[in-house]
Image (cartoon, rainbow, N blue to C red):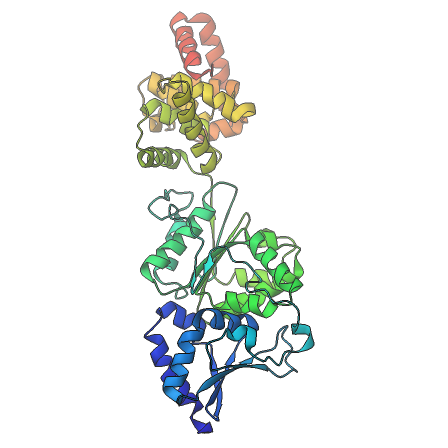
Length: 476
């Protein structure tokens, strides 16, 4: 009968598979290896003590019934548990499961080495949301592809993320590293990938975790001699999303364990998604072997959103909140706050809160006052884009005309005025102002400013234009 341990366990698995979810079956039963069947005792090998405890806590009743059904009334189960701490020289220790209905964890005789006699912690790495047999992904439902506004600044990153979501582990984008500054949507896009994978491939285990949390989990695992449990848990994941991976810099042991997990997942065709505030080439304090693996797939950057993208973000936010703002207010916010998505959304929320609390209508004037307080030190400095927009609206010209090479008098005049106000109201260099006006050089900008000053002293109508425009541009 000792030669039939594999077939006996296979029969057990068929019954177990019909009684639990496919995800739970893949996670907790597929890694088990049958060792022997002697005297109606089936011995199975499990990867760690944590694994054994999980089976005992959640599946002991099912296991006991299945073993008795397949082996006979005297059938019982014995675990062979792989040693902790990667101690390959030591033999696995065993746990024999009694056949009665008492709590087996309390009553089972355990042949445990001395270093394992310390108090056991059921979940040494404390994954938020780890419940029963289902591993929560820790994804925010709102962070979907539908809520992520695409623009020139993030088109490559979004397209590659969408490809990964449709075929996780099956594209050249593994790992996929998304990098960029604060508030540009890295976390949103990374979570969008995870959410889409869960929708398209429900059976896959997707886990999102911040690099800082990963590090703290690993430290806890080290303290409690549960490194094997920690590593094994992460090796079970089908899609691993690590946010702010730059947090690993300078942490050698964390990098070592992540290197091991990375290799296992990659070699088994699992998908890895990483986010960082910088590309791999700029990561100081990261091991070269890890950096080289970051470069195996695709590194896609998320840049500062352009004007059109900023307007689209505001409109999407408004639509989702069921509100409507005057077009001039939306444009003013988009022109004035050009740093990142987070600040744009924050400004809109602040404006809505002020209007609600003070019971005021949302006007351009209120928006200007809000920006003054919200942006503080930079509130007095409007953007070159906003100046061009106001000037073009005033003279009823398309902004593309302003940036063209045409020498029509009315266009040249509007171009010169926008250069004049850009020099006066921003900290931009003459070269930068010229670049925004169709690629003009600094000498052209300087000439334009002198021309405007001279005309304002000799032409009343022209001076009136400047006064009107300055009122529109000045933040009260």
